[in-house]
Length: 116
Picture 1: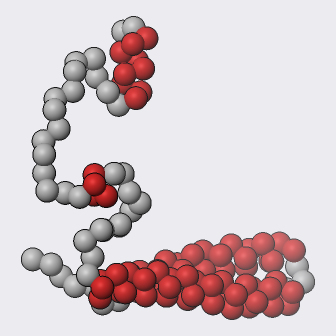
Picture 2 (picture 1 turned 180 degrees about the horizontal axis):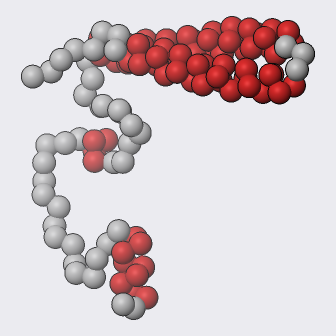
């Protein structure tokens, strides 16, 4: 191995010349590396459904975070023993993560169509 082959493997290239790219009917926006789940050819209803799912994830996650934080603080202040506090917070945190994942999955399944 030499430096050229190492740099080529890091950069994702190879030492051989690249083959010419095949032409397809994809738009210029579909050829770029775009964020996860970006689809330039969405219909208006599909775009609205994606926006509604994103809004619900943000809103319900924020509400869950606020309510869960308030009740965790209430539990924290009601327990006098510091070791019992630490023992109670760990399961509360894990349960919060499970509920947050459930909210996110439920919002993601909202109005999902099966495509053939």
